Image 1: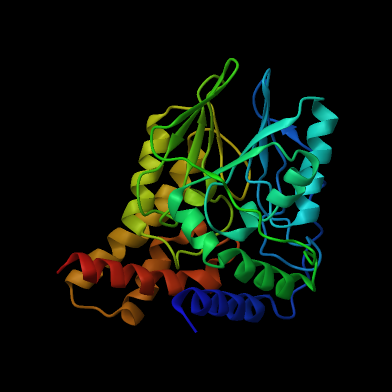
Image 2: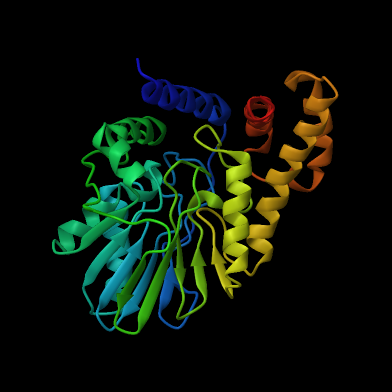
Amino acid sequence: MGIRQLTAFSFLTLVLVSCGGQKASAPSRAVAEAVGPNTYVIFGPNQLPNPVNKGFMNNPGFVVTNKGVVVIDPGSGLKIGKMVVDEIRRVTTQPVVAVINTHIHGDHWLGNGGIIEAFPEAVIYGHPDMMERANHGAGEDWIKLINGLTDGAIVGTKPVLPSKTLNDGDVLTFGMSRLKIHHTGHAHTHGDLMVELVTEKVFFLGDIVLHGRIGRMDDGNFKGNIDAIDRALAANANVYVPGHGMKGDKSIPMAYRTYLSTIYETVKGLYDQGLTDFDMKPQVVENLVEFQDWGSFETEVGRQVSLCYIQVEQAAF
């Protein structure tokens, strides 16, 4: 079993254990909300995949331009992608011309097939690292994982991969709409794209930022993620859209930055004092008191202390 398969297996095991015996709350109504003059987001339930939300848990977005619609992260399965299409059609008669996938985690891009089924000429974009991993079976791994968590809710979904690459500084122009791409290196994953809608001052963060729930960092880098948030803040957007959780002003990315930097600085300080990751966990938790009501805090914080410890140790040599 390779590293990719081990990561998926460990993720599935932990989620199944942490969700055992819990009743999932009902998902939010899937209605697109305007976050700018021509930009919309369907805010998904801020949960892990489960049989109630049927795997819908992210924040698909779309921008209506006079040259067509651009979709950002159409969700985790074929039916969810079709739901996004239904919402687009409720808003506009324009066709979808482009889809941007922010990173490799399947809850964000396995809905590509639902978009392409309705708009086969649409071009799908992703970072080269995301495309490489998808070409080596990451999509199939995520389909298996999400089906396991949702009692088969995304059966029939097949990976539909990006065909064109995007990287830092690229700009996509559709009529009067300009979308600037930001990639700062290893952050939440190695291939994260953030999308700045320059013309409307709306900034899509992908999973560089979550709000109200603690994200997994198995593929991530704490310092790199903090650097990416700093880039997003420098854009001075009016609206920031996290990968999971509700939108807002700069306070949304700032909150997650505070969470990550508190872990990193606390772990680094205690590492310098000679403590082990196990010994330092209580102090880290105490320093994170303002985040202890965020979803998945109890199941994630110990793992994140250990991951951060490894990264601090590597940086010391």
